[in-house]
Structure formats: structure tokens, C-alpha cells
Length: 393
Image 1 (cartoon, rainbow, N blue to C red):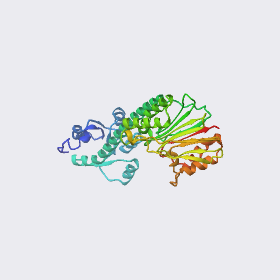
Image 2 (image 1 turned 120 degrees about the vertical axis):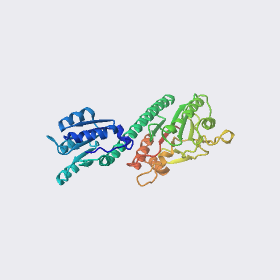
Image 3 (image 1 turned 180 degrees about the vertical axis):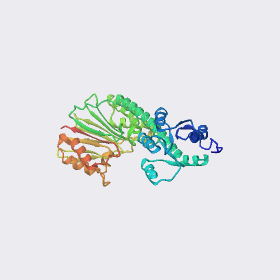
Image 4 (image 1 turned 90 degrees about the vertical axis):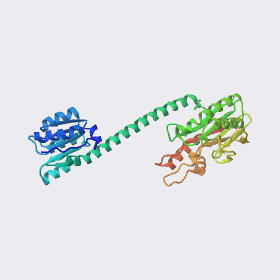
């Protein structure tokens, strides 16, 4: 049998692989070792299935070439065991004749190619071409998958870290206060909607319902500075208009140009029964009576925070004095924009209808159930938030 010259650079990927050759023909085995050894990372050879099994367990080859007919267990039996262990390991059969039964068995096993005797370097290279491409694709896919998993794990770790930091920086809301109830449903691990509630020293209740551009971590990061501004300025006794103007300045200075925050700031003065509201870019805030009917609506009177800078921004506020017991309802556009499976938005009408059908102490619960029923199996595409505050007579 003549040896034909070959260039190991023709198939560089082959140099990264470990091959196992099984053939009881010592001359043929030696020839294949001579041809393929310079082209591979490792090459091992066996004269029978028993020896091949030992070498396979020890070295876990990337590709196997085996003769069909050998003493004891033949190539088909050995190929069946290899494919059962790992179906992605290519197996090539060396055969000296055409046999329909053998061919059918090989197809059922999942054999990746054939080498017909007499062998030449060219025929070996041709037979290896397809399984090598398959191995290369599988390896690339595994590497890309591993890389994506690494990036994902790193992103998850960073997100968890920032989320924990934000939770530490955000002041907790007192849930036991019977004057208000609220609900926030993020579409991601971190919400781009923020509700802040805080009492001023004189007993006035201040509320902020903020909705940052987008959702998730990028949106949430934009809320950190205004969260701090809110609590600090409420403690110092500033009105909602002054708080809104300071928030606008901070966002404009500290956030990217394409990031802004729709925000509604409200103060409820229980002693004088006065509501002061500044709505910038949010859906209207409703005032409802005991039956859930809307008695007044506070529409947006200005652009969201962070769009205009300096003297171009002036907060626009609206003052309302109540006589009978009412409830103030603030919600983000994630609730009105929530679409069902037919693409129909929940809309303000859905909120109003849900409020009418609820009792005074179950407003938030009923609205939440209504929007979840409306969504059905669909996932909300934006963060959703709602707060209801009691304006006592």
C-alpha cells in the first residue's frame, strides 16, 4: 500500500482533535497512524473492540474510525456503544464491500461516514471532511453557549448587586398605614416604576409615582437620584412644585440625554383638606368618591422630568380642596397600556370600571385582579404600578 503525501495545514481543526482507530489489519492500522498522526493532537489505535473500549474510556476521543469486520465484537457493535455514550462523537466505518444489511444497520446507528478499501490519503481526507465540519460547528456552538452563559451570569450578578444597592438606598414604605394601598409589578427583576410615600413634619402626606424610560435596571438607575431628592425635600417642608423642579434639574444633569422620568407628585394636607398635585407625563390622577365614580381628574400639565433644562422648566401644579371623603388614584401607563391576547389595551376605562366595581377598602386589589384578568396569558410589556390614598373628611 502506497503512502501519499499530505499537508497537515489543509485541515487545521484536525490538529485539535483526538482520534481512535480500530482495525485488526496491522498493516492498514500502521498506514493510517502514519498518515493521520502528524495531523492530529492525539492518535490512538487498537486491534480489536476490547482494546478500543479501554482506550476510549481513557482518552475519550473526538472521532472514531473502525473496521466493520473484526474478531469478537465487530465495528457496528462498537459504534452502537459509542453512539449510546455520546451521539455527537462521529464514527466512520472502514468497509471492503457493499452490504445492504450492514448499510441499513449503520444508518440506524447513526454512522457519520464510510471509508472504502483500498484506502488512499485523498479518500480518508474526503471521508473526514463532513464529520470535521460537524465537530467544528458543535465546538463553536458549545463555546458560544458557554460564553453567553458566562455573560448572563455576570449580568445577573451585577443586576442583583445593583438591585440590592437600590433596595438599601430606597426608603421602605410603611405598609400598615391604612391611609394608602399600592402595588408595583416589574417586568424585570428591578422595576422602572417607583412609588415613594412620606409624611412631612406637619403631617401632610407626600406621594411620588415615577415611571422611568423603559424598564428593568437601566430605568431603575434613573430613579435613584430623585428618590433621594423626594425624601430630603419633604423633610425640609418644600411643596410639590419645588420638589418637581429640583428633580428635573438633577435628572437633566445626571442622566443620559435619552432618559427621562414621568412623575406625579402629590401632597395631601389632611388638616386643611387640600390636595396639591404636579403631574408631568403620567396618565391622569383620579379623585373618586365612595362609589368609585371619578369626581375630578388631574391631567398632565407638563413634560416628563429631564427633558427641559434650567429656566425652561417650570412645574405646573393643581390644587383641589375636598369636602367629602375621597380617594386619590395614581397609576403608571404600564397599566393603561397592558394588552390582552387580542392586542386591546386595558386603558383608563378599564381602571375606571374596576374602581366602580370595588369597595373602598379593596380598590387596589380589585384593579390588580382586573388588569391581570385582562392580560390573560400575556406578559405585561411594561412595569405596572398603582397607589390609592384615602382623603379623609
